[in-house]
Length: 413
Image (cartoon, rainbow, N blue to C red; front, side):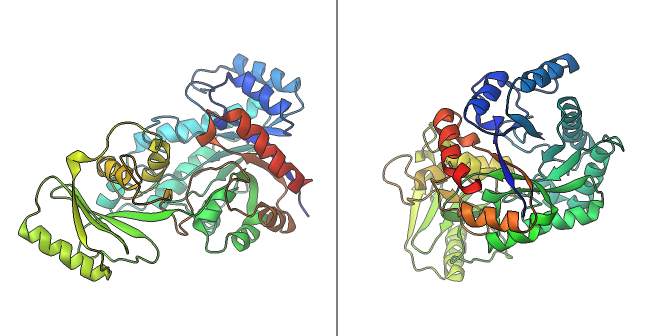
């Protein structure tokens, strides 16, 4: 039976100086800390070897030890996380992410860390426009180029972290990618929250993946309102039992919400007779009897508010669409969630296979079964670090840091 050692990610402590973040994790009683790249707090393009040696000396004064280097998803453009990815169409774009992962390998080498983690990225609109290019082949080639930076004698392993909406989304897809790359220095990183979002039976999936995993992310989550966004097309199909649909009409950039309880057209003015007929056909196809309402797009909320983080996290997880389409959908979703008046939808918005919201909650504040998750992992061979990743709780980092330890430490004792 394996053992899970509790760590905390600096990605949830980015309001602090980096060494102050390490001290906070140590004082809270964690065994380890995940070193997460961050443009302001820990930027590998601005840190030389002497800086890294100073960090290593700081670790030597602590009980807490470095667990993993996370090559941050938000690093290049916080408004477009994960971009450019390891499977971007242009090699120059892929090289930017490859260089970041290679810097992760160098940081791991300097700090004496054995693990470096990253995600696949998303299939975006440019992939859809070039179906002749296989994103998996690009991803495999990029990973192999990253692996070339690890010396043969080094005990450093690269890890793929499946994430909701990404090209590598499920644990089975992560295992298949491991087989395609075919390297003993490339393994799986399990995020338990992501598994809860993406797996039909996440406990069974954790057990199946445990022997191939070297690292965990830990956070809580809960059921939400599942919503997909897609372009109008003759191939469009609805499954309202699984998810409501926000249909985007590319010619006018308006949207139609198709939901068991609601049918709402967000538009700049009156629809043409042709658009009215198309809307009627879509509602009939979806099998909804909800009466159609029209909302003036110009009246939708655009000011910043408390829903921003939720909606931003949702939008970046929707693959296959341009950022312009996603940004134009933002005010409609904010309106539905009550940014300006009573919410029409009273649950957080989700875009996942299960309807669980990909929003990292403090352990104990959601509905994830940590006891069963940890048992499935340790019983099936996982032995290593499990880092709590709470980047949605940076402003309340003290409460999140200590509440997480109080909730999880007894389960791992």
